[in-house]
Length: 240
Image 1 (cartoon, rainbow, N blue to C red):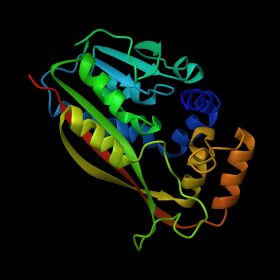
Image 2: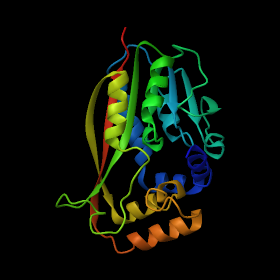
Image 3: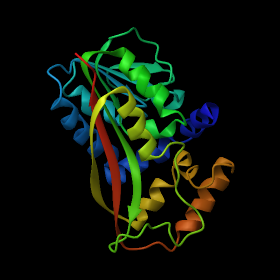
């Protein structure tokens, strides 16, 4: 599974950045998550951006952190990070000492592991007492009447771990608070999201890269109109 995830993201750099240029979604999520995390800590100097991708979220955290560290499983993603320290590694097994960070952020990443509990406990290990963790996970896309856009299609856009599993994993390791963020979006944005090879795998995980993206494009071709995208956020703190 981890090899497939790494390969998918190695092949997703250009499409990932194209989606961000179009929507600014990952920047918005990182800013909102940073605000929620900072409300719960008196120190935000050393922050681990776990699953940093190309560093979109790392740039956001670097505005408020003296030592931002970007970590990602994908070599092709992390080598494009332009700020802070860079580490290619698995957030299920962090290469850092106990208590090394004030904060750990999983901006649109913790749902990409089939075992989020392992990553949550690793985050708790590398946080200092009173440190803060934050994560966001997608709840999906809905029409104006509240129906899921995939309800009438023959596929469900599914991650290795859903938002509920992310929340449960963090609840087991931290005292948490949670909520939902909603973004107006378009049918074209949904198509662009699933044009990212790693995200097309949410629909067709068993297909090769090009075939997977092509099938996702065909599936979503007739989707139209203004939609709403929802993300679950979870923020927790360690014991003092």
